[in-house]
Amino acid sequence: MLIYAGTHMQSPPGIPEQLLGTWRSTEPSYEGRTFELGLANITFGVGEGKAETGFIERVETDWEEHHFVYTVHYVQDGVESQCSFYAESLGKEVLYFKNQPKIKWVKDKDNF
Image 1 (cartoon, rainbow, N blue to C red):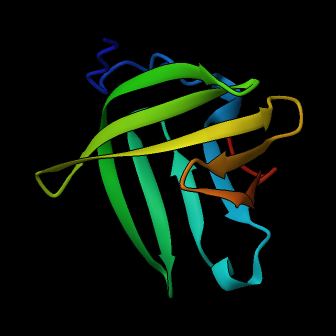
Image 2: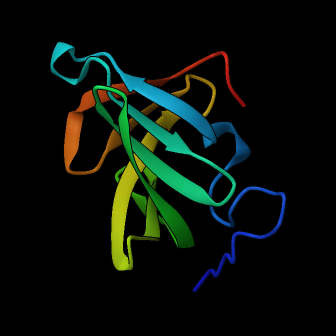
């Protein structure tokens, strides 16, 4: 099991540096929403300038159907949670959440 305490200035174990940063969906229904992976946190921009942030506890990486699946375990407001996603290709900077595989998220070029 990979453990990340969130105090080191490096990417969390199991998350490639290319995945750090802010991601935006190309779906109109997700306009104004973001997904951000930081060195120690994960943030979901839920619209209207509001965000929910959790602190990364650990990251698990698995191989499923021709791609890596990253599961980020985090704590938000004292509650443990997780989210899983996969990257289409690290060179293309596109990812998909495992529970919404048809919704594409593209990395902002102006961060990280």
